[in-house]
Length: 462
Image 1 (spheres, one colour):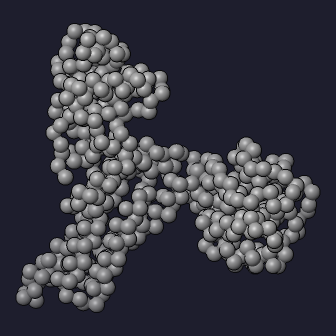
Image 2 (tube, rainbow, N blue to C red):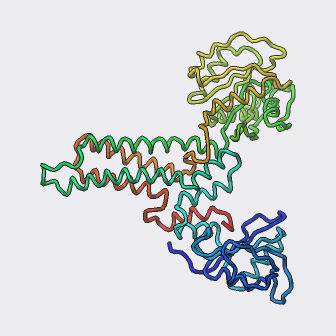
Image 3 (cartoon, one colour):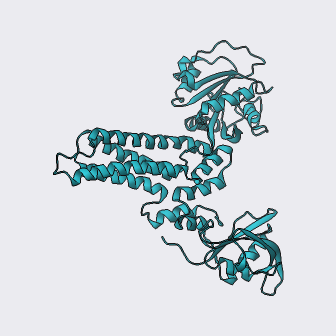
């Protein structure tokens, strides 16, 4: 894929706001913008210094004013795309933004494809592929955690991690290549297999750690799934309404009111949690209600955390039924209607979960008792690491797959070093590991189709 030398334009902001921005990038960006601009100072944009603003009017072919604007000028290579660029700040009317783009296209610009500005930044070497993908994540970030992760990746912290791994693996490759080149000189030893094995294992440990962070990354991007389950009329819908602070679910004394899953989200400590209110679990002949109960168990299977609500001590059969769906889950046993009931100590050993994965709390969803404490339990069980602007967490499926492939290939390297496999075979596996990691940043030769697919998912104007 090569960098196009035509000049592109696009609206970079959502229409309807007070202000809107049209971006222009390419060799003729300044000249073409100047052709539809009437500067209040009388000076052309061609004479404007980089990083300066010029006030004036956008005018059409009849010199009629379309809007009063401010134009920012950026000169290559010191711009987002690495090319000459302008940004036209005007009023946010959809009509005005459309007219500005129309005039630019008539002057000689081309309408930008989705993600083409960021694609040009990548092709110009302004950022690697993982940083380019972080731009889309930053735009889509809906909470503090995802914002920090996207900013960390955009700043190149993930790329730096991969760069360190690459250097370690290149060192390993070099030592193996030297071993091959001087195989006839038994008296020369560049590195013993123990040293190579230690180096490979350290790299594999970090690759595995990064791959494992993908589960957290996905939960943060999509919202940590929390299923609220229990028998009918134990207060599940009331609890959902309390958590999201609105009447999201119908509350009724009639059994079986909730027949399908209901979802809503809230943020706790800057992290999004996705709550799923489910149909009450009971024996029923109602076919529709049975479908709802089946979906309840499906929601448990997909959840990271399960809030099991009861309003009386669970029976042995109820414990067995819920326990059969809790493998790998975190559980909060919410003893509801504590304003009416007094609960004896609950033996959680029957649930076959680790003690650290269970919390027990008395609440009253109706009277908002201990709901804040319940939220604290939810956040604690999610086990979200402390996230700052330099935290590295994998969020892209493509990155996870590349890391997983690198781990598999590096395992072969480790096994080969451990079993005195010939160096040339080990070196081949090492080259594959390097290629896997390079796919993340785009530093290797990457098929055009892969790049096009990535940038296609960007919005117009980015």
